[in-house]
Amino acid sequence: MKTTIRFFSSLLVFVTSFLVASAANDKVLDIDGQELRTGTSYYILPVERSNVGGGLSSEGHDCPVSVVQTFNVDDRGTAVTFTLVDPKEATIGVSEDLNIKSSDKSCAPANVWKIDGGQRFVSTGGVLGNPGPDTISNWFRIEKVQGRNNSHKLVYCPSVCNASCRPVCGDLGVVQLKTGTIHLALNTGSPLQVFFQKA
Image 1 (cartoon, one colour):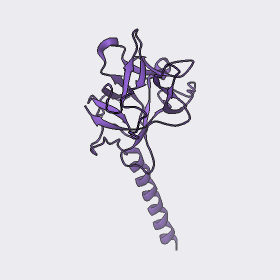
Image 2: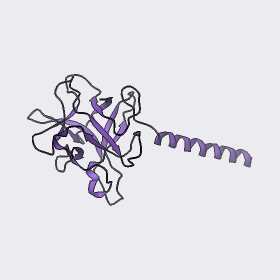
Image 3: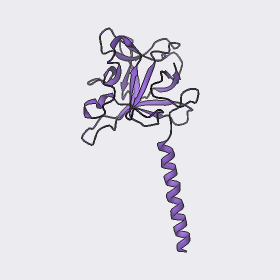
Image 4: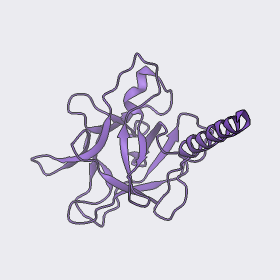
């Protein structure tokens, strides 16, 4: 009897460990089913390709610039690269803290995405790397959208600093202003579902 209990206890521990490890190793895939890689350029495109807009891009005359959704559904926007907390990591996992850097050179080197205070819009002007309380607004995550193949959402909920940092977590979505500009913003009520296409 003790042997049977010990066997099932060991089996339960093994299965649980395997499932936790599998979830932790879940990689983000691009539209072609390939793992997203750090340092590689990608377009972030909406899953819903109706008349709502195209890819994500940078817009503005002065730096930092806003991250917006293009009006034209065929416009792929501006390519971005991803950098993880550990710069030696080559592939991007689900729920990993990362920086998103626009390939738009108009505001280089400050073309890393960040959450702006106040209205919680996403803009450039962030700092690459250097995880901690001073860069808390620069860290994002990619999460899977349940029930859709290779469909993801961008999330702001960094874990790069200790419990003293209490960021307001939420999904990134779009909000259209009276000017017509479609801004990427935090907690809009509906996450923007996206996929990634190699540039």
